[in-house]
Amino acid sequence: MHILVTGGMGFIGSNFIRYHLKHYPQDEVINLDLLSYAANQLSLADITQLNYHFYQGSINDLTLVQEIVQQHQISLIINFAGESDVDRSLTKSDVFVQTNVAGVNNLINVALKENIPRFIQISTDEVYGSLPALEFAAEDAPLNPSSPYSATKASAELLLLAAKKSYQLGINIIRSANNYGPRQYQEKLIPKAIIAFLKGNEIPLFGKGLETRDWLYVNDNIRAIETVIHSGKIGEIYNVGTQKELSNFAVLQAIAKNLSGDSSLIRFTRQRPGHDQRYGVQTAKIKELGWQPEVDFGLGIKKTVTWYQTNRSWWDDKNYR
Ligand code: TYD
Image (cartoon, rainbow, N blue to C red; front, side, top):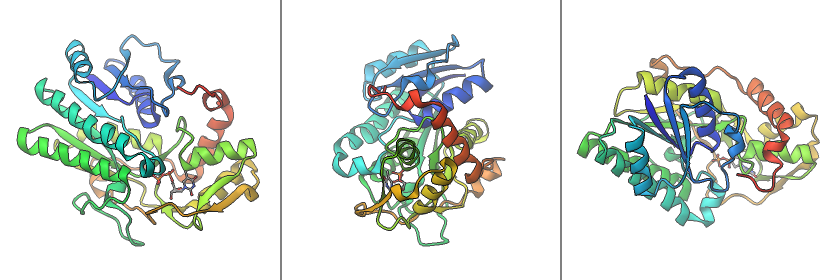
């Protein structure tokens, strides 16, 4: 297989590439990444396999994407590229529309023009919006995004569904819960808190810290993507999550405990505008394909904390990238 991975220097994309090259060394993996602020080339610096190639560029660059697809006879696009920070989206929605919507539209156009049989879009459980306690959205639940981030992810999904209907593009959409684990950029809650505890800095916790998230260890998400590649039904949407949840305050306490960190560094701050109380996804559909999560939060957070402790050079670099 010849796979174009977009956004492969980001958190989930780089973890996917590491896993895929290890388990499928016969595949060719092409990584197209813009190297914007949240990308980190150190994530794949040790990958020297000849079946791995990196191109710096944008998913909005039609000529470049088309050249790559032709040169490498791409048969599968997996789109990890995207702006993903909710707080940034609240003040910089333009760049979210440009990357998450126009960028995906561009990839769709290339896929159709070049007859690429499969396109897997990495989306988010946030497209369902905030859900009441104990409610879990199935894949056919309505889209009800709250932030510019989730609105652009939902828009990209609609473009893909339209390409499926109009041109039979072989799509899958994966709606994952909040990922955490090694190599996540420090704007997100978990790496931000680990790094702040390690440096002795304050950690801002929005509101009362009572919002909850379903925390999915990144490797479990990668295994779900692997499952969809091999066993997913073309055209289908798959939720991926643990169906367990933790409040933000409980997450910070767990990190503090693992680091013998000082909980007094937690600062309750202003509430995030439009802050979603809770996400929840039903995962029966992906489980029917044989997938289930393997790493519970206690183990996953321990592994994550240890990774940030032992890979300081990855995050303590002013010139990130
Ligand atoms: P985040 O990691 O930004 O993911 P998302 O907003 O996509 O779920 O945030 C996770 C939760 O943590 C969310 O409820 C917002 C909260 N949060 C804080 O309280 N303080 C922070 O500094 C950050 C980054 C997030």
